[in-house]
Amino acid sequence: MSSAPTATVVICVYTEKRWDDIMAAVDSVGAQDVPATETVVVVDHNATLLSRALEEFGPRGVRVLPNAHRQGLSGARNTAIAQASSDVVVFLDDDAAARPGWLAALLAPYADPAVAAVGGVAHPRWPTAISGTAARVNGDRPGVLPGAEPADRDATGELDWIVGCTYTGQPTEQAEVRNLMGCNMSFRREVFTRVGGFAEDIGRIGRNPLGCEETELCIRARQAYQRAGDAIRIVFEPRAVVDHRVSDDRIEWAYLRRRSWAEGLSKAAVSKLVGSDDALATERSYVARVLPAAVVRELRAGRVSSAAAVVTALAFTSAGYVRGRLPGATAGVRLPAAQTQARSAGSPSTPARPAAGG
Image (spheres, rainbow, N blue to C red):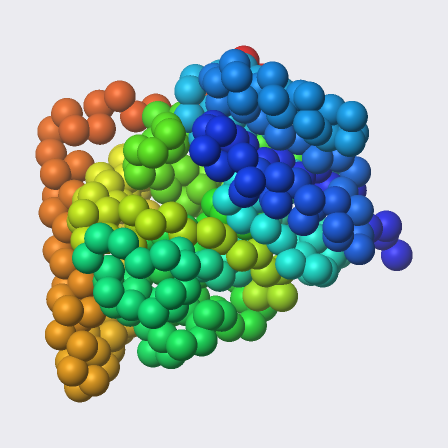
C-alpha cells in the first residue's frame, strides 16, 4: 500500500488590503488535521507586503518568497512550483479559508496513481454590508448572482464562477472533470515537470479579471499525457471545502459585465492554445442546460433582475469570446516553455523542466 503523498500548500498574495484574509488563509492551513509538509506564501511584486509577510510568517515556519517571474497570479504560482519539494502542490486563494478536513480530502484521491490533479468546493462568503445597487439582506446571496436556494449559504448559484466559486452545474459527488477552479486545487508536481507551469500570458494581474489559466493547464496536461499514451484523471472532490470571501465590488452589475467579458476573452485565448473543442466542451453543456433553467426559474419567481443577470453574463461572455477570436486579438498568447520545447522536439512525452524554472 502506497504512503500518503506529501503536500506543499501555496498561497499567492499581492495586496496589503487583504491582510486579514491572508492571515486567515495561512491559519486555516496550519489548523488542518493532516499537516502540509510546507506552506509557501508568494508575494507578487510588492516590497512592503513582502517585508510584512516575512516578519509575520517567517517565525511560524512558513516560506515567504517574492514572485521571481512576470507579475501576476500565474507568475507567482510558477515561482512556488519551482521551489516546491512535495509530491503534490496545492493552491489556496489568498481570500479563502480552508475548512477542517480540507487537505485530507484533497489528498485522498491521489491513492489512485492515475489521478494527476484534484480540486474542491469553494463557497462564497458574501459581504455583510450593503452598498451600491445590490439590494439584499446582510450576508445573503445578491440578486445579481442568483441561485435556487438564496438563503442557503452553502448552496451554489449559476453565476458563482464570476466570483471564483463553485457554481450550479458542477458535480455534487466525487467525479472526473475537465478542469479545476483556481481557488482550491492541487496537482502532482510531476505534471509541471512534464508539461510546464501556468501560462503567464492569460493569468490574473492584480484586479484584472482575465484568467482561465487553470483551465488551460488542465487541458494541456491531459492532451500531453494522452499523446504519450498515458491516461490521467482530473478529479473534483466536494468534501474538500473552502470559504471564499467576496468583496463588495464583485456583487455589482459593473463587475458582472467586466468579468463576463474577460471570461470570453480568456476562453478565446485558451482555444488558441489547446483548441476550441477541448476549450469549450464543458461550456456548451452549461449554456444549453444550466443557464436556460436559471432564467426560467427566476422569471417564475418574479425575480426579473436576476434573470436579466444570467442573460447579461452570457451575452458579455459570448461577445468577449467573439472579440478574442478576431485576428491579432490573442497574438501575444504563448504556451509555457516546457510544452513548447516538447512540441518542437516532436516528443511531447519527453519530460522537460517546468516553465517556472526560468
